[in-house]
Length: 357
Image 1 (cartoon, rainbow, N blue to C red):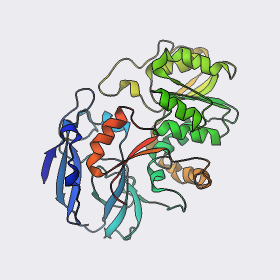
Image 2 (cartoon, rainbow, N blue to C red):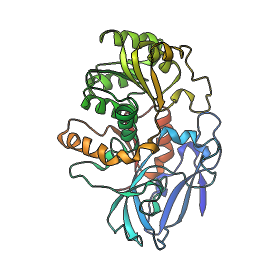
Image 3 (cartoon, rainbow, N blue to C red):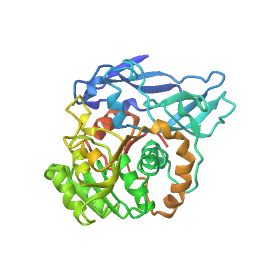
């Protein structure tokens, strides 16, 4: 197996001239110190594996780069091993199978990503055949019908139990989970939806394209003050907060949540990249004063909702009422570039890498 460091995200474009005999993967070769560098990764080339009994060979088409990947790179228990292919949500097509549940040509979702070819077994590690809804783009299965959409759906319908007519705030609203949260909340009958984002362009996208009622750039001033101003239009409060950030966003949300409000805590962008600043807000005791509920959302606890999610959203995807909201980077050679760009906020919606057609 040949490993080539990745200076400047340097998968050379000429390398991606894949033959049917050669596969490629991305390895993590060093632990990041703060924000990851391209030199923390390497490209490897190896023969396309042949399926053993009970497995199928998948040629990958789309792969996902996600914020949670950063948290698995520090070497803590359960994280990524060095000098091994990274894992990630992926969609591909079966090209050879010795798994009786998978046939050549099947489209599958699996987690053996960050490589061009994968060996999978139906039902193992979340591997499943895609239902193949007519009129639904493949990108949807890694965005609003994938882990990001499932996270948003579980947060709203199970953790926070959003009811029609309630007001919602979602942080990092222009990202994958954030955009999915906005779409699903609107379909569930939310009255007013407020979002935060990291640039003026993203704020315009939230209100002008995605239909958020209000949005603000968290760089423009204290989050709590901007949120309170945005919430004043709806009577000075919110009922539900879907938290992708933590820190000052959580503190601001606690201030404006109404009595018996709910917080679905999905992620902590304020603590990624080695920043271990305290995520606990100074007003945490208001959770008691207001009888608030704060609960974490781990998507792996909600995989049983997948069919329910698709049945709920597919008609709206077909009608065009909602969209996939993705930023797609073309070429496996740009996987690390896409990952670093996602961590830096370059994407609108879910960041994906398209490997092939």
